Structure formats: structure tokens, C-alpha cells
Length: 84
Image 1 (cartoon, rainbow, N blue to C red):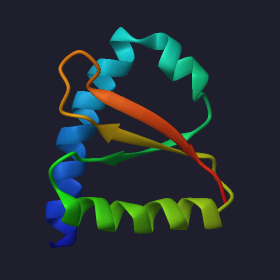
Image 2 (image 1 turned 60 degrees about the vertical axis):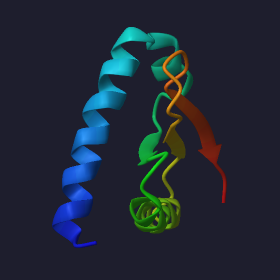
Image 3 (image 1 turned 120 degrees about the vertical axis):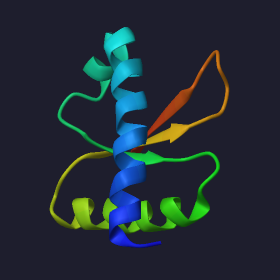
């Protein structure tokens, strides 16, 4: 997967996540100050690349939360803080 493809898919998923967070501000408050890294429930190649991004952010000293698309309409996202 090219960097451009990774960015494009991350933008699409970011829009979905943003819409969810707007509707669920309690989640946004819970992870205030965190960098969200998105993981797809179908695209393992993207996920592999995004795990590298998680490592880079942690190396920079940032708090990171894994936002994983679940494929479940009732609960479309799961959130897991990532610790060093």
C-alpha cells in the first residue's frame, strides 16, 4: 500500500470517527489529549502501517488511543488506550 493510499483511507475513516465522536462527546472527553490512530475491521495492511504510527507517536511521548472500527452498527467503534 502506498503512503497516498494509506492517507486516503485514513481520511475516510477519520471522517467516520469524527461523526461518531460528535454524537458521543463522552468518548471524546474520556480521551482528551490523546492522539487517535484508526484501525479498520477489514484492512489488515492499513492496520499494520497504523501500528507503526502508534509506535512513532509513543516514541514522541504522546498519549495514544487505538480507535478500531468494529463493523457493528450499534457500537461502530472501540477505543483502547495504548501504553508504552
